Length: 522
Image 1 (spheres, helix red, strand yellow):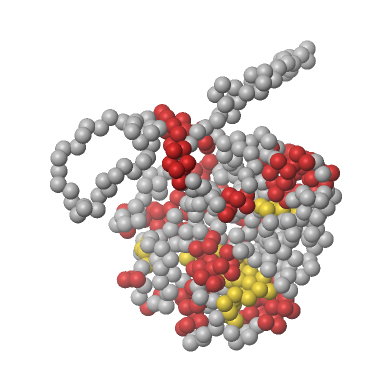
Image 2 (cartoon, rainbow, N blue to C red; image 1 turned 135 degrees about the vertical axis):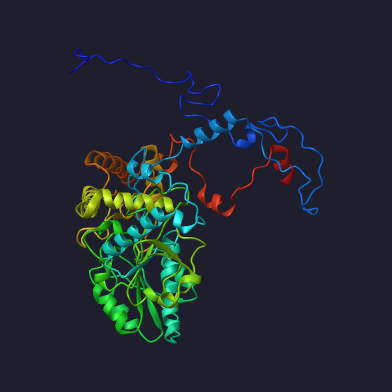
């Protein structure tokens, strides 16, 4: 039913004072928020506390005698400050989040509800095992489904994030080599792999060597085979890779590495594109981490809480880390640790972390798996690939797609800065997207593409949402190709204007000082 049948719409004048400025500096709900140090002073406090009674210090003279310089705010001032700041952030609950290789999908609220259930939300890692049987059963069941979905032999649940999982896999490979008295020290990393792969290998004490990509953006199998030898411990490969492509030669790569005596580590960060359709274990993978905050929808949040379980082949399972949850003959669950590892896990390389993993993430991930089922998880991958290809084919006429001819992409669409007007860059497009109401896509990665723009829409975006984003990116790209100078100063509508990013990187101001102190320092 149409309520306003006349078609009349109210008209509104321009907001704000006639000169475009306001007394407060605010513009309606766009609030000009000062630093917290500028709101409160060190000489004030937001609470009333009685002076402490005289007592003898037990700190042995280590107590601080001088003021620490923190601002004193009342509770309303504190809450309002951080709430106002939070409203200037972008979030997946506000709109499409196009960061490539990040899988910024919707976090179902069902998962959040289950993660807050008593017994999961308040479980303590040192609680007696007989009081947390339900939590241990949940960890064990999630482990079962991760092994099933990947076709692997076992899984370590304790790694806290993707890079932590990479280190876990590489340490297991090193332990396996040590067990057979093999001193191999070289890890091969394709150009299309994630940047954490070579960093992880180097951190673990290996020498890293690059393997080039072919013109179509995949691993050069011949170059890989030519480099294999008795000094190569293994290969770290991302599949699907950072060009958004599936490595068609994955099984041949694994067979060649195994024939040369090495192991295959697969970066599973992009597992969302193949979950339910491809089992990495069938491709000869020996170890692979799984980002629960990506494929299985647990939240990305401020650098955590992360969870990066690592699945292992039968060859590497004996060297997997402790602790892990095991089901006993009587149906109860126990935690296998150093004291209880016994003969059946005596070759473990040790621990990755103090305790057993991230319980909240385990609960959310299992909720996601069970609520989707086998057919639902398969559809996750299919829809993620469909959406990425829709973005790719909708924009390839206005932005160069360097691997658009390499077949369908997988989880993400990759564009370059080729064809932009002289002096215009990927950064200009990214900053202009902020004005359009979007977080920018991943920029300048992967390094094999000049001025790379990497867009991963995930499966949770509707066609309407994709069309709006495509329209915004198309508009910005057309402006960059036509030489619209306003792009170089974008964003214009954000709370802050564009920084001098070179100066910000080389001379960051990380400590607040009041004006007199700052002037004196200069």
